[in-house]
Length: 285
Length: 285
Image 1 (cartoon, rainbow over the protein chains, first blue to last red):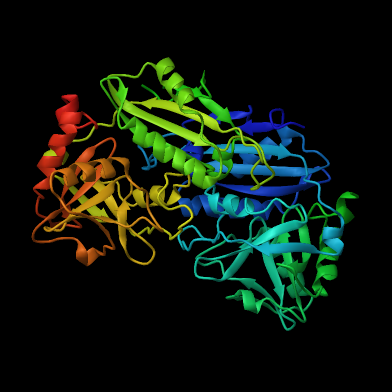
Image 2: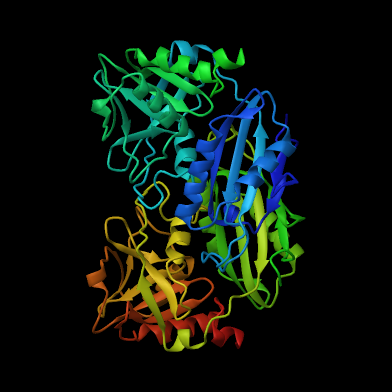
């Protein structure tokens, strides 16, 4: 399906375009969610919507009503497997950076094909690198999934080799925060650790869901400051997660081999059981 | 003129909309310029185009050819006084954050009415405040005018009182960098000083032009690190500048009165003579 004919709704209307004057384009003034569609249904929908709504609140505009999104999804006729991208921008108006006093947000719903990835990335793991591009420290925008994503674009530009699945990103002060499009879960042997996102990074919907499952299975889950040297080299392991892929083990970082965490199989089983991501075990790919 | 009927060209075609799939909307993956139109002509055009081209280069895509922009301007029929906003995005394509290997940039040209401001802001000066919102430190994106402008939007949201013309923004480590939509020129008595933009902030086209004029008139011009306490309280003065307004003196910061720099009149005379901005002395407003 070409990008020109993808199903798109803007404020409920089927159209592949939005106003040039929209603040989403002018300033990246909005938020978005990337959601797995499995068996015609958007997965972890309530959690994605909650993060999007929290993002709108942080940016200071009212998020589109839940019923409007649901109406959009009914109109779109979701595929059996795919990707749903929903965005809310502050809409048109205001004077320069000054937002309008009563914004009328723009609601965008796009349906995209599921990206193809080698099946062994789920079983044997992925090779990752460190990005030279760093994440800036900005508590006012940390945690939410806003449309200002040049740091991720610049980081993802650093490599073209298809064997490298992801790039780890550090904050400008040297803490490992996340990868360009995935969140980290680090098995430190005694606990599962995820980086702090108080001043940097995005809170992962799938990451949170998996940690709740792990916690229910007896894992100790911690938020902590992680640096390159804190990534486990002997026991434990490093995992990458997002709403599309579910969970990948990392088999090497910058060529250095890593052990496979026993949590990989346990958490992938949880995903396959609940069908919350586009894993081969779920899609039959 | 309403925002729906403004003259807009996208890749040379008259249309008020762009593709939802454009990376400018998805990620803020692009750059823009805001240019004064005086007597039917875009002012400081070569300098704006040079900054835009340097931004595209920093982001890693080829900027639209100069002839294409010029063709757009001929097609638009610029007004006697107004604002021209031109943008270049990385266009459609790629996989997620990964840009396409051969981007086809999107070229956007919009013509907007000149904003109305009280004439005394040029003569008596403006009241400004300090913003709580800070600018993050990101050397990879500093200096250029990219489309990731949520920090400016969030800062500009902090006040609605029309008496406050601008808000000064500090970096997360407490250096005064710029205001939300204007650059600073600080008259320290012995020299004219502007903040460093190596890791933060935008290099101002009008700011640079004015400093060249001042330098030609004998001023010593320095880049320096400025903190709140470095802003002059007794002699010298603080000025705000951008391509639309030209130059405003600041008469008070957060209620604290400031002296009027002798450079205000000199530099405004230069602007009026060269007609490089939408000052009342230029537009007759």
